[in-house]
Image (cartoon, rainbow, N blue to C red):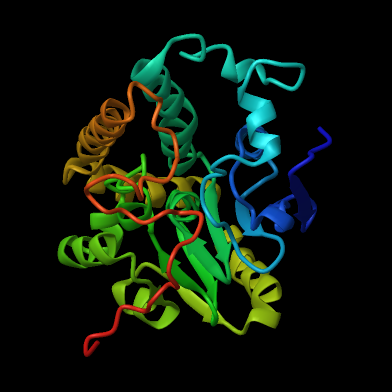
Length: 300
C-alpha cells in the first residue's frame, strides 16, 4: 500500500519494520487518515510471519503533538463532501451529538490503541522532541519506549480543553497516581530523565543517534525466539490486566465521554470535539493560544 502519512521501511530481510509518522508540517498531529493508515501498517506487520519487531517513530521535530483538532485535511476527512472517509459515515458517524462522538472515539481513539497494545509482535516506540496528549497514547501502546535526550512528555487537555485526559487513559499506570494528578491539573511536562526514573522509558540516546540505536536495540529483541517473546509480552499484559488495567481503561473512557457531554451541554448541544473553552466559567485556556509548557520540578 502507498501511504500518504506514513513511511514504512524494513530491515534484516523483513525481521524488523519501522513505521514512521510522516506529517512533520503538522507536528505529526493524528488526523483520521493517518490513524487509518497506521492501523493498516500495524496489521500488515502483524500478518507477516517474517516480522519480529515493529518500531513506531515520527518524522520532523517531534514524535506527535496529539490529535488533529481541525486542520483542513482533518475537516475534509470527517465532514460530508468528496474527501470524507468511509469511517466518518460508519461506526456512529451518521448519529448525532454525544452518541456520534462517543462511538467514533471508541473506534478510532480507544479500541484502535488497545488493539495496537495487544499486537502479536513486539513493538518499540522511538520518540523525540515533544510527545503531547494523544502522542502519549501511541507511545504507551508499544511494549518498550526508546527516547532521545531532548524528549518531553505532557498531556495538556486538562487545562487547555477542560478534559480528563485521553481516551486511552493509561496515565496512572505510566506516571503513577499522584504524578498523574499533578501533570493533568497543571499541564506541566516531565523530561526524559524523569521518564526513565519512572520506568516508562527503557533507553535514552542522543537525538542524532536515536534511529541507529533503536534499530540496534530492536535487533537484540528480534533475536529472542518469537514464541518466547510473545509469551513474555502476554504474561506482562495479562498480569497488568488482572491488576485492573483493562477495566480501568473502560471506566475512564466512559468518564471521558461524560466530560465531553458536559461541554456539549454548556455549548448548546455541540459535539464538543476540540474547541476552545476559554469563555466558560471554569476558565480553561484557549488551546489555540496556550501559555508555554512548564517543566514539573520539585521546587517550583
